[in-house]
Image 1 (cartoon, rainbow, N blue to C red):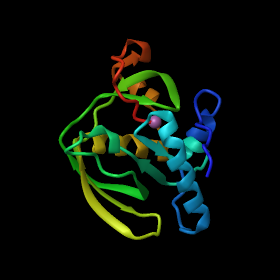
Image 2: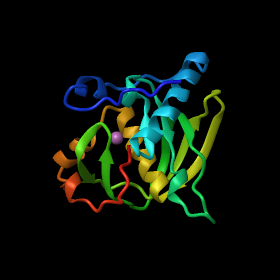
Image 3: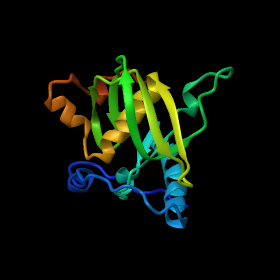
Image 4: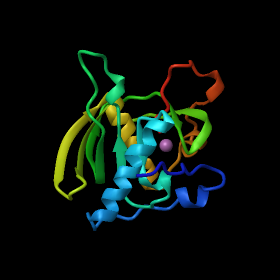
Length: 175
Ligand code: NI
């Protein structure tokens, strides 16, 4: 396992802008990438990580909101979504999203508050579930990365942008 380099703008912008390729091979290479992403994420303080952010332009994301709960209601264990799709969504949710690939700023992005997600696990087994609130937001943020979309694109469309240094200290960076 290895801690991978987080790709950031402006240097890695061309790479981050690619449309990531669907995963077709669920073999050892994918498992090795997953292991590296699992080792990389805790070092960043983020709650999600998309494969393109660590230099692999494939449709896989890691979600880890395990430390966002409290003792009685811990968050779910970290999990991977491979080839994720949002089948439908309702409601609204939003927070000032930080991105490991776009250091120094936050953008308040309007997200769906509840999404119906279809994806595969690391073995290619299909799964379908409903995500709400923070989990819904982080999944939508990570899926933006798979389509080469960054938080600055939302700012360009008029979403409020803040400087990281103006944010309250305990607000988590998404990824
Ligand atoms: Ni991000």
